[in-house]
Image 1 (cartoon, rainbow, N blue to C red):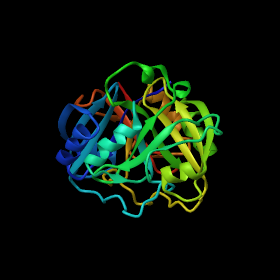
Image 2: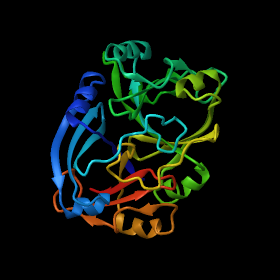
Image 3: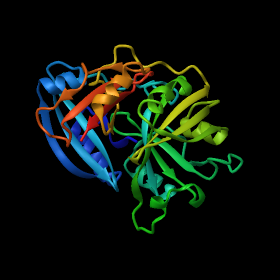
Image 4: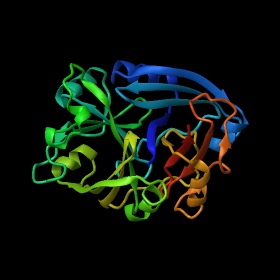
Length: 310
C-alpha cells in the first residue's frame, strides 16, 4: 500500500505562511531549501521555475509550503466554494475545538464555517465529530477536527497537554467517486475504509454551503496522512478545476505519495483515469526532499499527485 508523506501548498509569501503555521497552528519548521533545474521543470510542468520549499511538521505529519520565485501562479479565486473541484483541505486534529477556535480568533483567521459545529448523533458513522473550516493567509482550506472517543484512532486519544495534535487526513472534492476509485483504489491500492453521508443544518454551517449533502469516501494508506474523496450529491453547482491550471497556481495542492515500485506502477497508470504532468518518471539530480525518482500527475478532477520512490 502507498503512504501519504506530505501535502504541499503553493503560497505567495513563504515567510508570512511559515509565521502563520508556526504561531497559529503550532507547526515546526524541519527543512528550508531552494530548488531549480530541468528535473524540477519536467516534474512540475513549469518552465524556468525556481522555488522555495519549507517543510513543516505537526505531530507525526508534514506539509510543504512552496513559493514560486519564478514564474508566479494565480491566486485562489475569492469566490471559491466548498463544493468546487479546486477544494482540498487538511484536517488538523485538536483536543478541544472550542479552545482552538478561540485561539484562531485571536489571530483573526478567515472563516469558512459559521463556527465549530458537532455532527448530529443520528449520523451513526460521523455523529459526535466536531469540525470548523477556515483559511490560511492565501485562502487555502483548513479544518479543525475533534473526534469523539468511539470514532478516534488510538493516536488521537493519547493523554497530552497540546491543543493541536497532527493531521488526520486531506480531502478533495470529486465529481464521481466511483470513477475516481479506479485510480486511487485499483491502481494506487488505497483501501476504502469508510463511506458515509454528511448533510443537515450543522453540516451546512461547516461548509457554508446551503443544502450540502456529501458522500464521504475515506481512503486508508499504509501510513501517514489519510485521504478523503468528497462527492457532493447536492448542490451540484460546484465549478470544475480550471482547465489551464498549472502547478504554480495557488489552488493546486500537491499530495506526495510514496510507492514501492514506480516503474511497474507507470504501466498501470497508462490506463487509469488520470493525466501525466511529467513526461514519465523523472530522475532527480539531487536528493533534496528524500527521493530520487518521481512522477507527477492529475487525477480525474485535476488534483495533483506526486508519486515518489524513496
